[in-house]
Length: 183
Image (cartoon, rainbow, N blue to C red; front, side, top):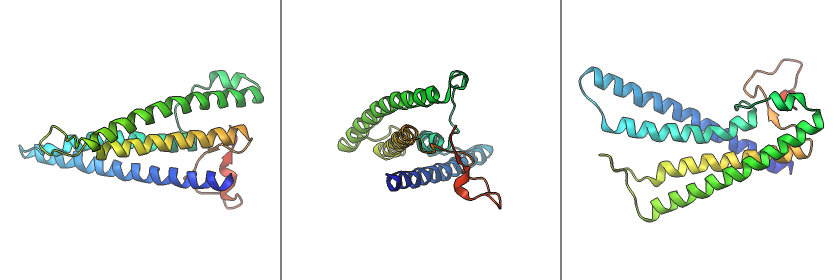
């Protein structure tokens, strides 16, 4: 089971890396548009592709946010509960999230496969095949589901379930895995 969880962590980290690269791409598109507009020009593709990038960034970063514990969470109730009740509340919340994300993945799969089969193109000047950005969002939501499932397994089996300060430099006397902790 540990090897499967490690593979999922690597996939999550890869999705996170792609999200970061897309942020740079998004910035480049917007800067290109700003420079073009300063010269009374505009590129028709910048807004379209930046929208695809933003949707992809959101989807690809959602799973890693769960893995690293930086997602938005209401902690008022869990902090008032004993540790055992907190754990099982978290397990129940993860189960609910898995069901919701499974429905989202199912809907995105239908949308993406339909766009691919029918060769649906964007209505803009670029006529981009819509299945490409839809597939990236589908990948991100699939990774979110995998990260939620990994969190559920780790939480239910009393493994460390969040990687806090994942990008922080380890202290000289602290091994890298010591940053993993229960919350």
